[in-house]
Length: 441
Ligand SMILES: O=P(O)(O)OC[C@H]1O[C@](O)(CO)[C@@H](O)[C@@H]1O
View 1: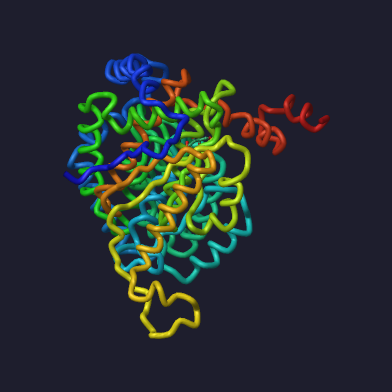
View 2: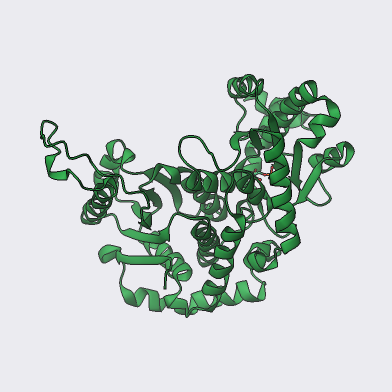
């Protein structure tokens, strides 16, 4: 059977099989906590059953709205930050062509930082395009997307008039709270709800991710089918054969032996944003109480020519998790020119994917020999189905890993610190005392 394959055979001498057995009781306790929903943060476990909970009518409405936007506009601007855009971007970059997207809308992103030049350039770029917007914020109060939306809304109302703009705006937010919800109600925008019990970084399979993904022309039914099968698989398998639990357990073992950084390595530039999504998932879930593995990501072979030196030879604090695809799909052959001026005669007629594959094998062995344990997660193919499976796999593994570490994997109290300072420094009403204190510093 085609399956996601988790391989710890190159974890090296730092991992001994009995250590997994030793963790079995703890893994079972975590499994019970997830099952009985009585662990820390369990009010945010909605994503666990979500693939089987999502109603067909909601999926159809997502489809319908995506088609409506496709009919009206060439470009969809997805406004959101963190979990409110990274999952969609990961899927869209993985599953649409690198150059031009003939299957669906062009997707652009805003509200994921505060750089004015970018926003100005985006507004100029959109000037002569037919534009639609999906503004996404669970809290409905995040500054970055709020500023981007204010600017883009103003541009769209100038361009299409108030009612024309209304047709082109879709809001994805909380069912009841937040400034964005109030604005959506006031303006009468089409709205999707982010379930109360699903936090931002676990929300890719809700309308947060699904609407932009559908607008980009990706088969969201297949994606949800993949997620549903992952849900069933990782619920039923014996714990030590269960890839989610095994991956979480091995992370925990390596962390305790001083491997404080995990590098997610991919060999396809389309996977760059999978790395970004994964970093938020694990970083916000585990990086708390002064604990947690630092999640980093590298794109190979690109980064072998920049960060490869460090991985091979720098501080031995790293382990590497490779995300691989068994079937590389497109067979592009290296031309057989009958000449060898460029020294590539020995590769003539061979697929580029073979060179990439051998680079991966060579890298894994070199890193393992250099003291970097290597884990491999392989999906059969790059498809909507397997992307849905992979998202679910990582979310569940992350929850298990966070519970094993002893943290609440579903909150993110630390992100408030910069916000409080920024608001005070900007003179937001109510933060006068902090403003004075920060300005004194
Ligand atoms: O969807 P929201 O509420 O705008 O939040 C966006 C992101 O910001 C954070 O809340 C951190 O501030 C993330 O957890 C979240 O994914």
